[in-house]
Length: 315
Ligand code: UDP
Ligand code: MG
Image 1: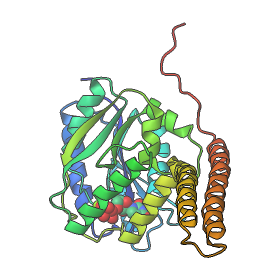
Image 2: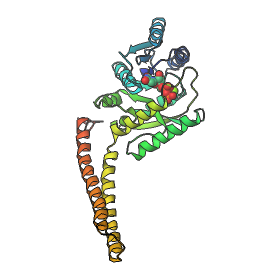
Image 3: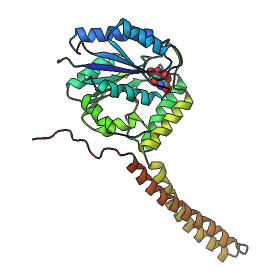
Image 4: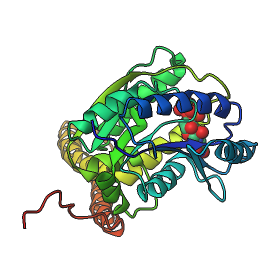
């Protein structure tokens, strides 16, 4: 195997309890990989402090001073996991050949790093870390997390099932990612849009060893809403479908009202009012749907996503 320059990118938010453990585990892992000649001795671990309110940054500074394997960047304030991760990836891209992103709590089994490196050697530019089981997650976390992926898929977001943000990306994949200029970032939905040969590496999801989850239910709902509204216009097109359905129903209601009227069971004015309600309701929804279709187009235009990314060129 050639020695590839790897950067591990680790977003950290209030992780002072977890960082000492993470640091010793990752140091051992990186040294082992360097000894096995799987990665270059210049490889690094990049901690991104996402505006932590505890002593996370002081700890990162200390770790960096003691060990040159560790680098750090500090965001000016808490910008959320996705932005912290992007900041780390874009910083790492300047020097790294490949990056692997992981959470600071090491819930993603670090053995996945070896599997990802193997996949990269086979020529894959993106390797998605996928959780093979969530037995160690609490019931509610597992249920909400798995529903999250199902709803996302149903809403038309191209997403890898049970893949969070533990992934390997090569330099060219990161250059592709850089071309996505949108502000509302949902990396799990955007990365599959980049293209290039990609693969999957399975790992066991472990328990958080120290500190608490920085993704409470409220943040998860926000991530899901952000994901849907940043990667899919399906909610808008659903209005059109609802409008068409309502218009068809209004026709059935019209027939029903006529029958009731002919049978002489309707009071004066009833037929007209009921038919009007359904017809006008249908027209309104359909019109909203049409406006929605245009808004969807404008929305897609404003994101300035790359129209294509060239993978190879013969000259
Ligand atoms: N994180 C972050 N900014 C935030 C929230 C979380 O950088 O605003 C980091 C956190 O430090 C961790 C990762 O994102 O490294 C995932 O968070 P956590 O493990 O708490 O989420 P969970 O595993 O419970 O979904
Ligand atoms: Mg976690």
